[in-house]
Length: 255
Image 1: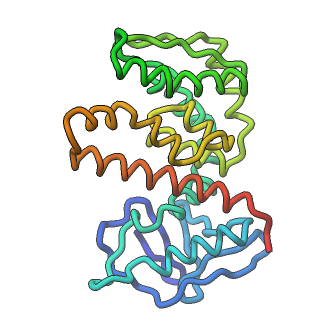
Image 2: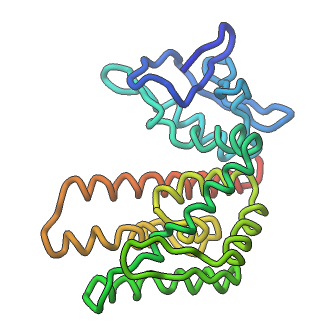
């Protein structure tokens, strides 16, 4: 994180454990929307753009997470304490500047989508995958007229070019907030299908995370709880919940 002489500058490469350097975070109405300020000075994103959003509800939430950051015994904070700000930065700077690259990066997940790689045979895991994952692929077909092939095993699947083009066309229509949410949720869930379901409001955070972690949950059902796995699932839950909250707040009308 760098700080200009007159404005606070936010960088995604902020050193972990930076000391809190402000007393008050607040929201200031401006011509472009609602700006978040620290002690009366604008927060700047890595490319020098002010942290300013159109939704008052989102701006209030951004200010709240800045106000909470560093409010601990040693007064330190990290980017992990500012998840909504991270998504906002992507919406404001990354998506407009790198939209084509973001779309292509997200589309690549269609070739390795978690839901398309199944356990061979007719065991409990294979049956559970069909029960939990097939409905999402059916939703994808109903929503976008897209069919994705599935495979038993780990060999890469070449998805139909027509399906990939339809997915690209669908994502191309999304606004910057929706694409920023996809950029967080798709890698977390390991699935473009589940990410699109989140953006479309087709499933709750709990439902989507449960589907994304089906294999791990069934593994623990057999071998017992594993702290490393439960921590990973909790991390996915937080990321997807933050993304869903951001999308809800960004879509609320201004006050």
